[in-house]
Structures are given as C-alpha cells and as structure tokens.
Image 1 (cartoon, rainbow, N blue to C red):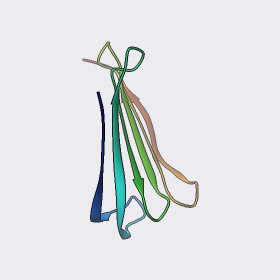
Image 2: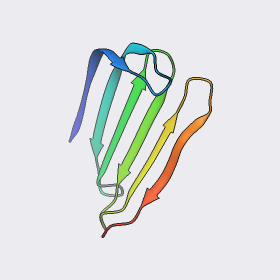
Image 3: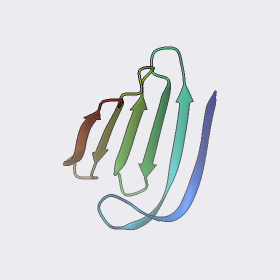
Length: 74
C-alpha cells in the first residue's frame, strides 16, 4: 500500500513552521517506510522491519543528522 499527502504549517526538525509532504509505503523487504519532507529541506525517514526493529533518521535542511537510531524489537 502506498499513501502520501501534504500538510501545512507544521514544525520541522530545524524549528521552522513549514509545509511539507508525507509518504508511506509498505513492501516485502521493509514492512513500512514513512518519509516526511519539509519545505525548508529537512527530512525524516523511518523504516519498520518484519522483526519489529525500527530505524529512524532525521536530517536538518543543512545536512546535519539530528537523529540516527536503530531500535530493536522488545
């Protein structure tokens, strides 16, 4: 299942209030991928895997990685 949509006036990782787009995809390799792209250039990417593990990366518009984590399933 693929799903996407836009949003207005939400806080980006850099603190700016901007518009943006969400994208969600489900496939056989990664159960769920969620991406959020902000108008300022910030980006958030999250992957949920079959075993329950979640990886998350948040990148500010200047390229600085704010979060890069892998959370193991409990």
